[in-house]
Structures are given as structure tokens and as C-alpha cells.
Image 1: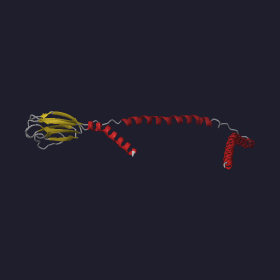
Image 2 (image 1 turned 135 degrees about the vertical axis):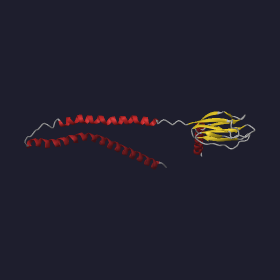
Image 3 (image 1 turned 180 degrees about the vertical axis):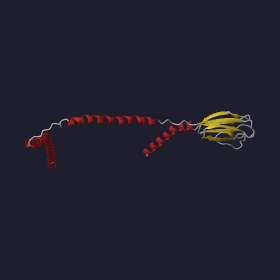
Image 4 (image 1 turned 135 degrees about the horizontal axis):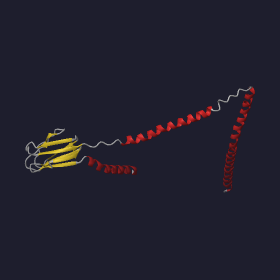
Length: 217
């Protein structure tokens, strides 16, 4: 239950944190139909905003666009009634009241700015370092290659006696390798001693506990 309460609290905090950003992106504006005129007569809003017209006159009014990307026509509004429309297409809109042609106004809808592709620039930098790294390695190998070929031009065409010391040198090399492998034996001896001591300690503890149980009434 506590885990569920904590999860619900976290979701509530997230929604409260996200609410201000949603309200800022989709704002609302109002236009008054009063004194046989639209107030304000000119309005500039971002795309996604909602505009609400409210009639405060005794005479009926409506909203009909005369220019713009979209054609808008509201129903006839009596005193106290209102009508809303959300502008999603950017552009300049001109509108008028069909009952009173002298009531004219305009709305400019601004397009939302496109986000800049920032991650594309950051990913290009490490790729250049990756391409330059392998270019240095072949230069080292190319320098080391002639060093390996230097001892080759020494011709020693001798009798089969030259082959004899080579065969004799092979067991010497194997003895050297075995000699280098022998220093690992003391570690094994120490491990065996430690294991033996641990076993003796366990046996002593077991014998003492058994004696204590036998002597107990």
C-alpha cells in the first residue's frame, strides 16, 4: 500500500509540474463585442491559441472571416453569449460582423518556432577523433616492419653442423621456460598449508564441542 501511495504522489507531482508548460503553449484570448465594435480590433496570438468572442450589446453579432488561410463563420450571438475558436494554422485573418459591416477586426496567428537540431552537431565531433586514431597505428607498424627485415640479409650458408646447435638450443629454451614456471610452486604450498591449518582448527573445535556435550549432565 505504501508503494502505491508513493507512486500516486509522484504522478501528481509530475502532472502539476507539466501543467504550466501546457497552459503557456495553448493560451486563451478574449475579444469583446461592445459598442458595435470588436475590442481589441487587432490581435496577435501564437498557433494553437483559442480566441473567445463575447457579445455585450443588445443587438446580435457574429464573426465571419473575409481573408485568411481558413474560412470561419460563427453562429449569431445574442447579448451575453460567447463563441470560441482555436487557431492552428498560421497567417493573417480579417473578419467582420455580417449584421453590422462596419465592425471589422483582424487576427495574426504566429507559427511555432522549429527546434534546432543540437544533437547532430555534438555527435559529429567524436567521429572525427575516431577516424584519426587508426591513422596513427599503421605508421608505427610500418616503422617496425623494416626492423624485422634487417637481420634477414645475413646469409650464413654453413655445414649441417650449424643446425646441430639449434637443436641443442631448443631443450635449453624449454628448461628456461620450466625454470620460470617453478616459482609458482611456493604459492601452492602455502595454499595447502593454509587449508590444512583450517581443517585442523575445525577438527579441534568439533572435538571440544563433543567433549563439552558428553561432560554436561
